[in-house]
Length: 513
Image 1: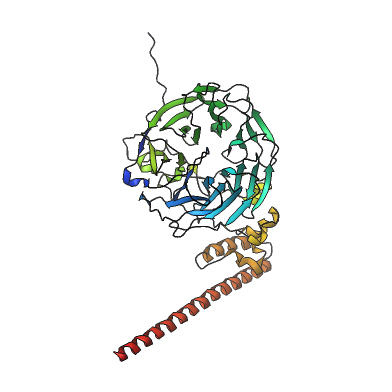
Image 2 (image 1 turned 90 degrees about the vertical axis):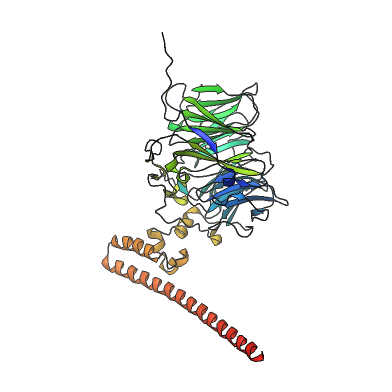
């Protein structure tokens, strides 16, 4: 007598749960645009949602703790002249967000700490290079300030955001509309899906095709694809009979899929979200009221169905929280921000555990916010592996957030020249001593600069050269401090004069009475 064996998995009992009503974001007019993007982006500080706006495009950025009913007068980011189609927060700076629009432009915005208090109309950088609307954005996972955009002109552009320059333009690969575009884990490859039913793996710097597979899904509806573990590719699409499908592919042998599963006959496009730490892929269908999740493993049938979260209301979009923003003490392995017609509802995915101790098997070291290479280095050919962090004590950043700087006077210079102006930690910057304080030194970061400079001078070949640089550095610091002191003295003097004038007026009024 044979007995059916249940596959062992620590994620078999993962369950999803919507938060209480007072923890949702209510009374938000979510965009009515018929575009198959997430419409939402989230990080440990903010949640951003594309909203309806008259006379152009706008999106709302709220601090995570600003829950409840959102006032109609809440300020928005409203610099686009056409509807916004996609938004994405920078993984290396939680205050930076990119937006793509029907006005053919990409804009980079800096959100102030605490959120917006007035409408934000002027972007930090405006990137113009597409001839049709821009519907896909994706930041490089390991290189600082590298952004990928894809438009309805069938062109993929890689930007060096700091100098506002299109460094790579891939315009001869895709014959039709691009449905999705994403990076692999270290940013060494790009994966795209196209209306010609082909998925392609591209070399991002050369813009050439490494591997491609035609007719991954027979249906005419949009195909979405993401990289999963070990360089494999998971795609979602439709069969010839309009049944929704999920497939797993190995780019090394693209002939037949490792697995192909039919799910249902709904018409909504499935948006895949892959968690490399747990090997779980979440499928969120636009217009659905459910989230399916599967575990991707090395054993057949490779994509194992786990469970499904269902609710009453359908979703118009979905945001996915990075792992460093989760509550590890509650065994939370994923958190989604589900967009309804008039609100945003967080949905928490939890692994039930009895122990209150940190669960090492659920939380391996994960990708942190620190980039491993700068933009100019990456475009010159340097690769960078993700810098991992531990979530054992609950993630708290130990490094200063990288300041987002734009050299507007150099927006059209070459990448190499840009490197000399932007690099604020290496030898090249310090060799420009007359202008070394173009990096906006303030009294709070002088100690950091002193340590960096001491490390540099220690390795100089000549003691006299080291002394020269040290004296120049100290002189520059003294000048900067004296300028700050002078400014503060002027402010104190102005305040003193104001107080004296007010005192005089009060005395005059009292004498009249």
